[in-house]
Length: 160
Image 1 (cartoon, rainbow, N blue to C red):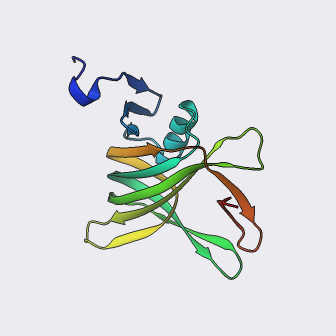
Image 2: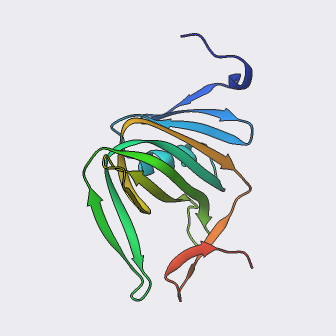
C-alpha cells in the first residue's frame, strides 16, 4: 500500500496492539481488533510521551467492564457486559499523577455503548475488547497533573 498524501504526510507509528499517525494538534489512533482498549491507549500515550490531552473515539467491542462510583463509600461497582456493542462515544483525558515516580500517564475514560436492542450503557471504562474498528483522536496539551483529593477519594486536576 502506498503512503497517503496531504494531511497524512507524517509517518505511521506502529505498536503491538495499535497503529497511529500524528496529525495537527495530536494523533489519530486505531486499536486493532481483539485487543483491550484501555491498555492499548495507555501504552500508546506512554510510548509517545503524552502527558496531557483529551481523548474521543468510536468503534465496536465484544465485551466491556464498566464502573460506577458510589459517592457514599467512595468505591467502584464493576459490571461486565459480554455482548457485541458499538462505541457511541468514548471520552476521556490523559494526565500525570503529580506525586508518583516515575511519572507515568493516567488515562481516564468514560464510554457510552450501544446494544443490539438500541439501548445504551454508560459509565467509567475499566476495560473493553475491540471487536471491529476502534478509531480514537487524542488531542495533546501541555502536561497536566492530578493529585489525590482524600475527601473525594479521587485523583483530580491539581489546578492550585
